[in-house]
Length: 397
Image (tube, rainbow, N blue to C red; front, side):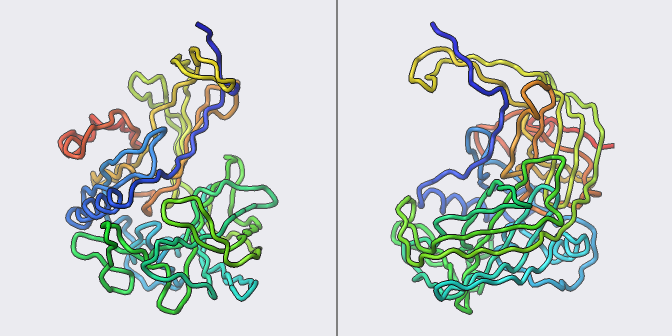
């Protein structure tokens, strides 16, 4: 049997969203979010991606940080609040750190105005919020508004757009299922929830998350160009796009933020995986790690790019970075998403992984990093198995 090898030895995995049937996804989200708020220690949610498969897992949800409550001076959009599940204390913390700023750049085309209104930026990741005026989508329809193309370049270099879309204005907890204005969420006949893309003032909000793929560079202080092209709608769970407004909205501004991070030099082996964690950097909105991880070849049956059947040779991944443990003993797994991982080059054993977090982290409150050791088969099993058996725990000193 023929043995062939993949063309590149570099392993790079970019987490992607997966389409889930409306009834299943919405009912799962509702059930899982009902746990939210009942405990400082555990909340279960649907993870957007894990390596090559998507699976439901447990995540801790707590009020992070010890910053005293203070009035926010930046107007936070609903989409940005939801992006990081942010509390008032965390808003004040990010503002004090200089990670979030107001932008205020607008451009109008064909009766539609797009305004860059808020940014949250560290060295490697940025979340950007845009207000869209002059375009409407009927509430309750199966049409999802979107731009046909969203392109981003920083300092003239095209960046990876991890996600982009209009915010649906839904807020679901164990106590309520409401839109951000406090009214109950409506359901369709198939049980799926009705998104509400229109805000009370007639505007909509478009949120982009992006990443720079260069560990020696930083997004902070760099000029950015965001080009949004052709506004229209998709039919739910379909790739069919209906173009309503043919135009390009190009916005140029500077990414204000903070690239400050808490750094560690380590030498912590992850069990018998062959990987040793050598470096870590923690910012309030992302985590970066380096491993010493000699390439491990994995052979399996498969089909090559020419359609020939044989034994394929690929390479093992290091244990996945998933979250943190706080100094008070609280575990926050499954908070790292939109991450990328792989070897720094084809001739090195240095393996890197970094991802944005879906919660704000106070770096000084973190005492350990969590890496996946065991994948539970069910939610019940997650609750029963202690964290020490689910994760490699790397204590930070």
